Length: 426
Image 1 (tube, rainbow, N blue to C red):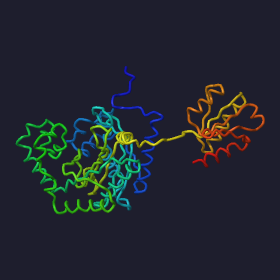
Image 2: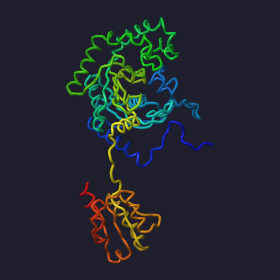
Image 3: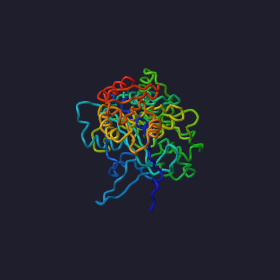
Image 4: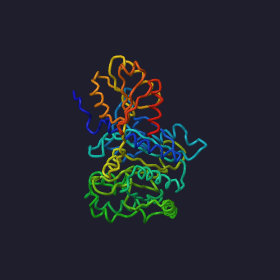
């Protein structure tokens, strides 16, 4: 019986979890500014949700899903991504019928894919994502792009770039699909088995193959830009115009495709640049998926969204030296000497916490000197010293650990005094 942590998972310990909380809090705060509301969906869904929503020909569905049969003989899958579950919920709860449209949502939580674990790519990982459903306006594409870039910029990242493409509308994609089949078919035997299987089902995904990326036919493959309808070209142009209005820099890459079947029109990635990040530079991916809601039995509803891995974001922050110093985690530590003072500290600790003050005390019966060392290790702002003599005289000593200044405070005003000191120092 193995008691080791499963491969591809990790424990997030105190001292490390703070950066996760910081990212999640900042991301949620920015979403609130853009009027996006949080949604929480189940960690597992019926397998068909992902087979239909992500796409039968994707690596996720074919190779990477954690699927199991429950006691009712139902096939269930741990979610490998967030969009399919959100759209399932959007349709199932008839959010399309609400008066306020578009429906603008964000989510965060663990996802699961059976992949080869490596830096920034785990089998259980955490995504933060956004979905905007109900608008076909190019302005909302630009809004979604601005939102994700705002998250990265406000977290301090600078060496990043927004890479943009358009996959065109249905007519554009069908024409491009036929051109790709004709291009690759005569030499498809030279490609990997995955590419051979994709040729007829979804030839666009051949362009995303990592094994055959250096094949000469990859360099000469037909570009989607040559097959845009007039409407597709105009749509992409307007998205770029909005980005220019906001002075958001971007790079157009005609070879950019997304790994999921539901994308059309706008597709994008945010890439990390600079040294120290590794070979996998994609931080975020997303795009428009105008046909996905219908796949789940809903009305014709356009949508656009993105998702990013918090693990990879943390890698980028560390590589660029942008992880903040979270400073003191405690405002006050109670040091006691004597049984009566020790008993009184339980009451004082409770009162401090009720007043909103982060505090702690010794629970191991340490000597006073060891208690001070514990306070130093915790990097507290104030140390309050209470002995039996001070208790009898209704007083307590408070030491500012930064300045070394120590003052005597009446015990019955201690809580008020500490609240003033802590709030005044924020």
